[in-house]
Amino acid sequence: MYTRTERAYISELCVKGRCRHIVTRKEVAELAGVSEATVSRVFNGVGPMKEETKTRVLQAATKLNYHPNAIAQSFARRRSGNLGVVLPYVPKVHIFSTYYFSEVLSGIGEAVKASGYDMLLMFRTPGEDSDYSAMFRSQKVDACIILGATDTPGERAQLQKLQQSGFPFCLVNQHFQGESFNEVDADHEGGSYQAVQHLIASGCRRIAFLSGSPEYSNSDDRLRGYTAALREAGILPEGASRREDLPPHWYYEGNYSRTSGYRAASELYPHLGELDAVFASNDRMAIGLLQGLRELGVQPGQEPPIIGYDDSVEARVTDPPLTSVAVPFFDMGKLAAQTLLRRVTGSAEETASAPQRHKLDTKLVIRLSSRVNRG
Image (cartoon, rainbow, N blue to C red; front, side, top):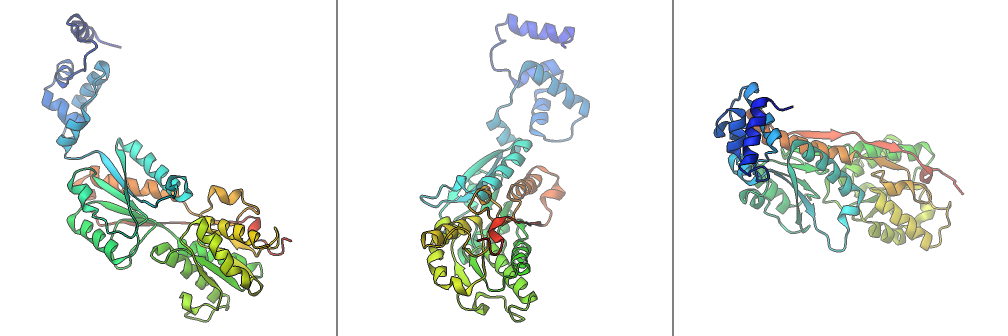
């Protein structure tokens, strides 16, 4: 409801033919009874401000339908208003349709929307050194989340450069031993341990492992969980933790794609009689493996017990439904964004705080694929 003074002011604007023009900061200042500089400080969040004054300015802006210029705001704040998200570019791979990336991006998007920021997607080619600092120097982003980072000398050097320059960034689903970066990860070692322990409890002992690319830290984490469960059960000797410590034909390697799981089927097929079960490092490889075994003549119900990882949507509709380890990718993306945005928009203490490492829990979801003697 407008006061008499407000109605008179707005009426005066209309008489001047200014009702449909873009409302200016000066008009908001006149209606609120403050200076233009005060209006600017309210919308840019600069300097101390009485709550009463801030409320009066915001109410005036609402009544006049005032929208501050985003470009001018970014200059005033010395911020772009963008949170960057770096994604790997892989030709012919529909990255946004993959469960991992779609879930992480959805989590980032929720946090970004709640903060009033925008999300800027940028792509890098895996295997090529990326100058991450360039996007900060060009003022495209205020902070960035890096997905698909690999533990290679070039990548590590670029991240160290970012850290030394004081640019805020966060890694998701990847960690670097010996470095102090902002990281949001999941307990992949614990998840793998649960999966293999479940197979052992079902009577399986000769359990093959289909790993992802070793340049990703979660591949090594899953290998550690896998070998820990086998050692605890007395299947592997004490100290065995590397692929070289495994019996012949127990270790296979893909790249987290369905195609790599499909190809692994031809390697694994000749040794099916020597194996009791298979643990795959993600659902896509597990599904590719199942498809490959079917095409090689393994009948439904006759394949060995198989467990995947990620608990993707596809895991619930395969034949048989896939036992898998659930990973909170949505929460990981959301937490990574919140962590960075607090550093960018928070107090000086938050901005200068030490890098944070978060590790979220995983959970085994049991379905038909891990049952022994289904046929």
